[in-house]
Length: 597
Image (cartoon, rainbow, N blue to C red; front, side, top):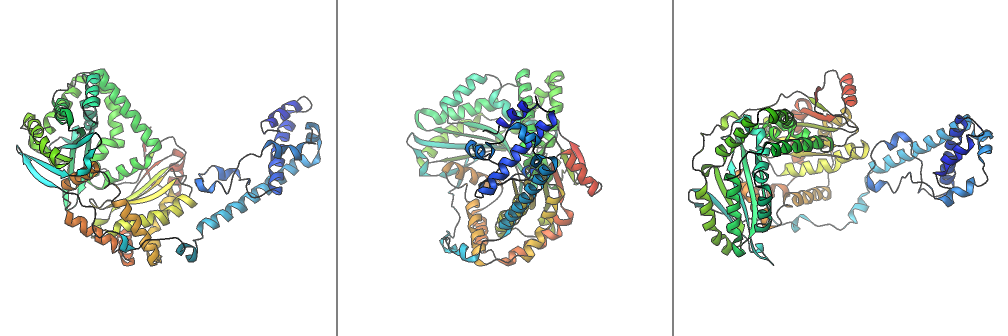
């Protein structure tokens, strides 16, 4: 008998009794079938109380605790002699008996959950851990991945060369090209238009022809904004980046630069309807990010409260950007001429020879051959631009009050952040190890395993000094913030042997150098290091600091956290209205509400 047959049993009995007994029968059959099976079988099937099913369960734990239905054969045997009438009239299926079944089932569920929690919180014995094969710190290279770089000049523009023989593939040599334009001279009122400006360059005008040429003549072309803090400077680094790649054969390199020149200078901002579609698409993407990647939105909002670079990024990809898109959707209908003029102003302000840096990655022969095409491209760029006004970006911030971005959701994204450099904490490579360890132990166990969130982690930005906690798809709010505040005590009371510390260092080294794989990404990461003023000597120091991390570094980090984030940190949560109301009742006026959807 399938579980679906229970409905037919309940329906057929309605001819002999009222609807209440029929529902009672269905419930009784279901309870009896599951409880009788679990009493005669292994621990494969267990009844979980309904309240616990609302919370996420880690995938690998589902094999230990399951709500899978028994097979028809398993159900048929204990129920074969039961008729609908006997179920309805039998005293063993009275309301009291069913209540007893419920109580027993819930008790069983609580016992199993408690047993599961105990297993999750109990660390593996040292003997078990030592049986796992491991490497030592001596197996890690003493130097970080080296990226060759040569800084030159072509017609007044800096050109970075990265020579790699690995760029020669079965199709022939490939040239990877990155062209960046400094945005520091742009009015801050135009910042929210930059993402749409980048999209318009590639997709407006002769859209089909341009797309076809890019597909045939190149191996891809993309345009996007990049913004970051720079260590030791209050002025953020902000650029528009054009990335492309092409084979050197059959003049493909020449075609690449011709297409980039066409995109940057010849595309006209004239298609009002198409631009309106861009705005609607961008608004839909941002609303989807709020629902499914609220931790990114919370992180951007916290950064905007703490430094200028964060404020710029939030204008182009956070809640402020979503609010701008909502207003722009109306404005496109009634004031298209001013929007088109603003897009043209961005082009004239930013896309100038004076603001340009070119980054090339390929083999030596291809780098040399491409220089003539680079020179022609540079000469085609305008040579004048407005006077830089980057000072207007400095000290831009959003109010540092705790903020709840309210959306219709059943889960939350909870963040808390502060600037550790304000306490005098100095940038060290050990901070990477410490953050990895906090994420993989304390936050994983407390926020994810015990708290029911899909994930909990922390991050430290060495350029800005901002340390942030974040949770992903979290059923809690204030409870998660309390866990964040408990991190200081966790670090101070932590006992760590050499094996655990070595494991944390290995995980960190893998993350730091994970992007240094292909020549394409090596060349691009070297460009970013150049823009941020990071030298090879500094990378070597950070690498050595990671390898020499000690327990004392954890204590120093705990002191910096205690002086900032615990009591002075800013809080942003993307959360449900009910959870925010409950939080404000428990801690009056803790959150200021901001409705986003």
